[in-house]
Length: 213
Ligand SMILES: Nc1ncnc2c1ncn2[C@@H]1O[C@H](COP(=O)(O)OP(=O)(O)O)[C@@H](O)[C@H]1O
Image 1 (tube, protein in one colour):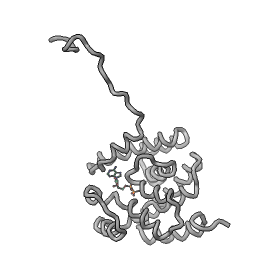
Image 2 (image 1 turned 180 degrees about the horizontal axis):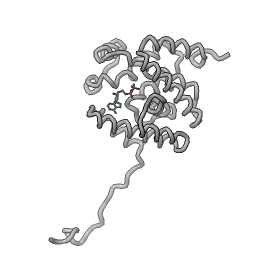
Image 3 (image 1 turned 60 degrees about the horizontal axis):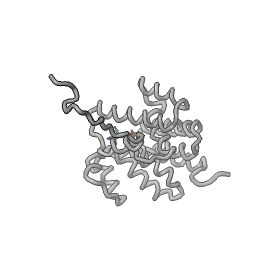
């Protein structure tokens, strides 16, 4: 029999608690993320149980309103810099990772990391981190043409490529909604880009290279 955080009993108990912590729409979304993450883990050869559990728990703290999540971070002893303190909507993954780690010490760090990184992403994300990030965007409750196109790519392209496509889609969406972008977003993006060769023009004998008027 499997016990601890990998057991069905653990999953079912957290699922029932989650149902009381968030609204019905968010609860359904979390079940969708859990299922999608498990499927992605199967396709990409990652730990299916870890993906299923991290997907279920990713929005553990999403039930708090803006002042509530700031109070929660404070209660947990988290020190937020001024930028994050001004972006309460992005904090629920960060607080959830700390809170879940304390409430359920048997949860492994890789599951907590995936919960922590599901909103803003990070440099050096693990396969599991990417899987939960992708599942959050592509679970069956998310609608739209772009989402459908991205869904079709599951298993067709590498996990990292799929993650980058989903990340780019989300950042674009945030811009379209005229929401502020977290300042480390470009740094995170660049960390996945191959090193660019710095363009250096050949020394040109003509000081006005594009011709004289
Ligand atoms: N790089 C970013 N910069 C600023 N806001 C972001 C960024 N990524 C996501 N967000 C915002 O954070 C909020 C929570 O996103 P997310 O955690 O992915 O969704 P959910 O918790 O609903 O599954 C959304 O309002 C989203 O637009």
